Image 1 (tube, helix red, strand yellow):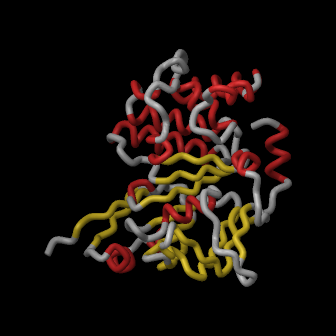
Image 2 (cartoon, rainbow, N blue to C red):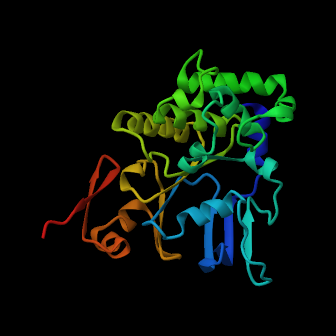
Image 3 (tube, rainbow, N blue to C red):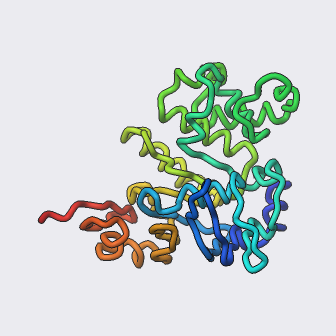
Length: 276
């Protein structure tokens, strides 16, 4: 981490996210009503819940892809501010998602995918390429090499395996040296080898001081470094606390509406079906 980035982190507010009585819609559908939630900067958090619980809506709001309903009694602050320029926000938050992975053109190079992180764009087509300076290109190449090895930049995104594509997106998120990574279903579609590799890399980032907010419906994506589980159900917070408190048979069986037995091993959690 550069001295400039370290100083920038030190000057930030302590709250990553401060929500009070917020109502969030996706299209015509009200997903959250009067939601209140606070996440401290530096926390390793997992937002957990079944499909339809509101996880993706929360990510899109945090990523400024959608906004809460205007209401004088509510607030939705990211790093102490109600409003952000999206490009300025990206220097603090890195985003990795399976949805983002699907948006890139097949012929886009791995290098261009990473460079697009500086512009918060999908690719660097046409005049966008002129906005990338030499320092950013060096940074992108260094980050890409660290995650995928040398001579990867020219490879077409579509020729990469799903695991390699996910690492390219991780490099895209890291080019700004963000203090927080938001990972939406990070291991979706990965085989065991690729998933283990991704989890190892995320654990190293956590050890190096990057805060992780992982959004998932799978217990096996919860890292041992996780300090807090926010469990969602039908647009409400069903439970909120340390993993041993939230990840138990009764609570998860109720939220997922199916009998579940939770198994823990060396800080990793797994959900098993209950034999009836």
